[in-house]
Amino acid sequence: MSTENAPATTESVETEHDHHPPHLQHHFVSSEQQFDSAKLGMWLFLITEILLFSALFVAYAVYRNWNPVAFVEASSTLDWVMGSVNTVVLLTSSLTVALSIHFIQKNEKQKTVLSLLATLVLAGGFLVIKYFEYTAKFKYGIFPGEAFDPTGSYEYLAAIPYASQFFSIYFVMTGIHGVHVVIGMGLIGWMAWRAHRGHFSDEWYTPVELTGLYWHIVDIIWIFLFPLLYLV
Image (cartoon, rainbow, N blue to C red; front, side, top):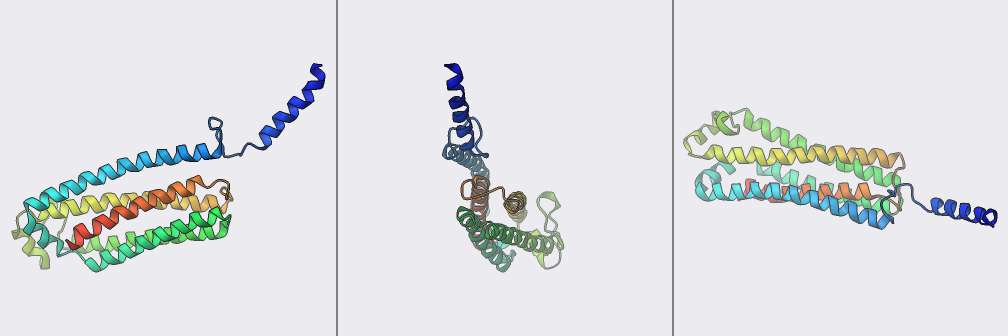
């Protein structure tokens, strides 16, 4: 009797194994549960990032309230044209990363790779523009903290009390944001490589979607930074 039941048991095990997706971890019962868990974990991480920048926004608001004249004068020295271009660049990168998710959902792997590479190029463009912004300030002694020693056309800032506070906040906020951009570029490049290797499909694209979610948060943070630092 046990001999008769053995083939059926073996067949059922093989059938269950055949229907078990290779990407599904053993502690999840379905791909949907695994995706929901991964997305929840990503949101918890992003909340900590939002809290970090929220603290910086509060610091900006407090110091600006204490020294409004100094902040207005210092802010007027920033290149709002470059800031505007960078805003457009990041908004466009949000579109291309969203397109990468759209294409992988349709199993169009080549378009997914191209969209991710386009996002990578745009992110690199953002950093290049920020590099020119930074060097334009460093050239005239505009540094954060005690290194603040403006010269040339910016020399008048030395006579404005607390102008250095604005630039300290500016470099810290944009610098931390820049680090997040670099991290995002690493993730996007990795996703592009994996997509090219065929690691994703319309059945499983969780890493691509989570990377896109991270990148959207990076873009949203800049949308708040730009008006606060350049326009207000």
